[in-house]
Image 1 (cartoon, rainbow, N blue to C red):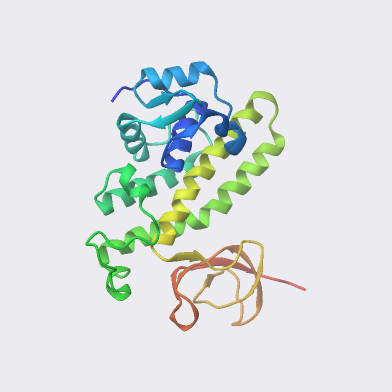
Image 2: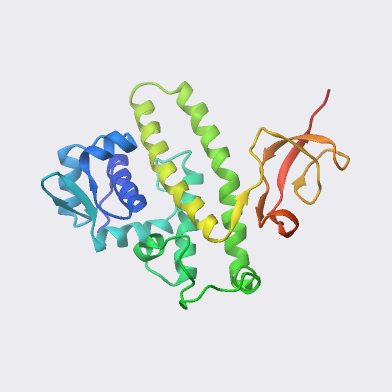
Length: 251
């Protein structure tokens, strides 16, 4: 695999194609994802063998080499000069670990539908599949990633408000790439039956099973959610995979 550095736009093209899971018309990169592609970006990726391009209409698709580069990049450390993108790199790492757990190439792992049966061809019994010891670490990492999506989005929003010129455009591109990665984190979480229970900033009743707090809060007291708990199941069958964080609402 070559070590030629890619620009944010070029990385964005690969991320969008990864999220798409198939070919995408060049016009749709701008219309749907807000990413403008120039000829030099397309030609560079094509010459590196990372994408294939077809005419009528102009359409881009990942090659096997492109998928392989993405797969390698999932476990790579945060690149130099990418200050503030640590959460995005962490999310990419989650996807990488999931594909290794599944024992599938990235292309096949992301192509699977949420409703598909287990790899053996038959639906796995819930109590054996979701609680297998080797999946516990995956569930915890996924839960942390779900919780941190809102943290990253808020930080990027604050950064966008103070950015000007070229930096503002680069932040927008980073936002597009991050949202694509987060889509896959959410898809992987759905495969594992994980959900955020409540939205950050919303009010809830305090339950120490669902929330951590540095304050002395009584059971049932009104609190504001700072970080949502991650749960699996519904009603009486609901279990907490990772507690959230709450703060007391003072009158």
